[in-house]
Amino acid sequence: MNRTTKIIFATLLTLISLTTFAQQKREFRGAWIQAVNGQFIGMTPAQMQGTLTTQLDALQRAGINAIIFQVRPEADALYLSYYEPWSRYLTGEQGVAPEPYWDPLQWMIDQCHSRGMELHAWLNPYRVTSSAKEVLPQDHLVNREPHRFFKYNGQTFFDPAYEENRQYICQI
Image (cartoon, rainbow, N blue to C red):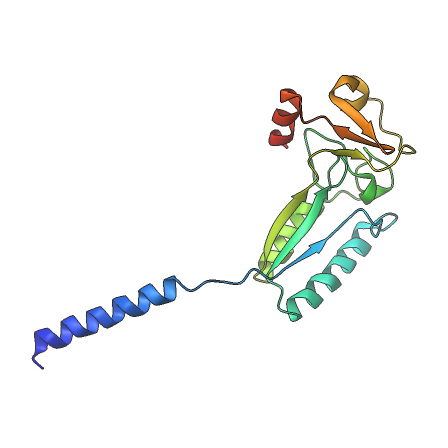
């Protein structure tokens, strides 16, 4: 083999190797961390961070590479939102910010990325309440514009038939 043939052969081998490597599929091994079971209510930020750290460490050891974190359980937020109130699943009362202040979504992004994990925010787009017993703040959208919502089986939902609701949810 002459020098030119060797260079062409080496170049083709390199291109084939790179192409094969680039086409390998990566597994999505995800786990969902929910908020609606009330696991965080009554916890201080340090306690919640400790619980989440324990969960993330265990999931990382198990080979999980993506976390789906529930950040909008009921037209509320586990992050600073300019559209919706703080979640009752975080502080026990909707509209009350965590004390001392922290942003659970940003904290989870940082923690997941430091572990080489993806973070995906899970939003419940239509649910506003899970039961008829829930009391929403007076300034909640449900109380300001009730025509945009419907009740079913004791729960309240955004009515997706309204264009303004679809636009609002997209803004979230």
